[in-house]
Image (cartoon, rainbow, N blue to C red):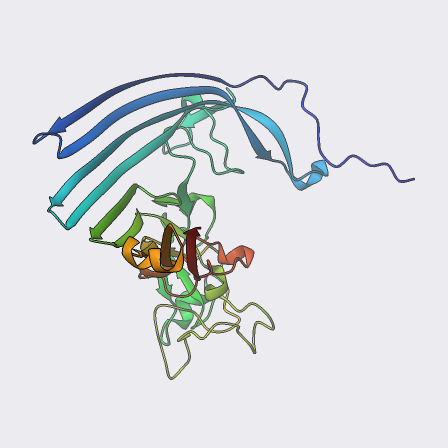
Length: 340
């Protein structure tokens, strides 16, 4: 029998505590043809339970811990309307829009010195968590990393060599110009979670036919795509992705050469519009069903995930390529429902 400890304990853990408030409004206009609701909310969670990364010397990768305080604020709007209503034709449409903003208000209470340009201590502030990339006053999903500056090109050999690079390697901005790339050169950039969410649903009926579709969008979300930043296997000879990489004859500024050094992460815009589903159905007329001794019959055809519109075309924008996630499948369904 083998016994081992697979995680570090933490006797200081406490329950999460959340305080929140919200203000909402429901409304109806144009003789109830347009209906809607809006809500704004704000909450603050104290002692949020998180996985805090640990130094390798501890023998553990992370430990459950309480993060000081995290604020959430957001807004939601929903609209539903009867766009058209006729004897044989009806069109109903609904739209939702929302956003959420998070900010770390407080971490662990550890203090650090504030120094001026000459290295003199002029005060103190609560320390950030560089290991986990959690910073007071920022969203925990805000990207903090090196700022990409394209690819080192021919003619830049001398400058690239200062950073241990050569033409074809990825280039990053040396923010303080000291000739060394480290945490002092990392900057706050975009966000890993969408800044805005949108959805739109429509339903059309014409006599015995019914057509509906639902689409949604995530706007302002960025994610890593490191398989494209470098090769997956045999870095200097092979890549699993068909990408216009840098070569002497193709001096692109988008993707480095095979086997290029990639000190930071390669971020891409993963905003998208997805058609979630399309459904078409037909209710067979009663006068026809009487002839075959059937009370009701409905024929239907639907497709889920028919297409996605996005500037990110390598894989599904909602999946994580660094974890080898696959595309969301496209599925078709044919249905026949009847009552004898």
